Image 1 (tube, rainbow, N blue to C red):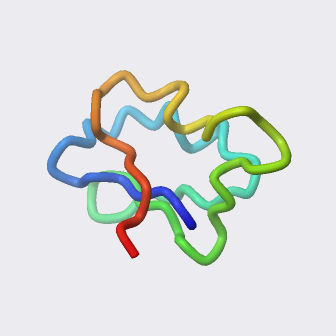
Image 2 (cartoon, rainbow, N blue to C red; image 1 turned 120 degrees about the vertical axis):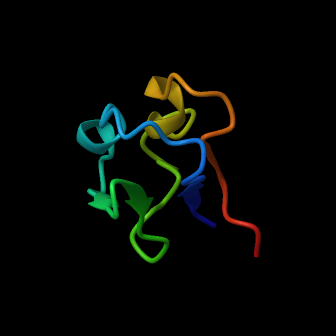
Length: 66
């Protein structure tokens, strides 16, 4: 599974991009985007996805609905 950024909630602050251990987060169309094929949800590295940990907006980063 992977995480995704809810574009309508993202403020494009950029806090999530540098903390991603897989570099899955990239700027795209004025907000940030998480590449689902690269995102690991930080499994085996951290207790929780680091993007969620640093994001100041509630419900901005959520699991991909598969």
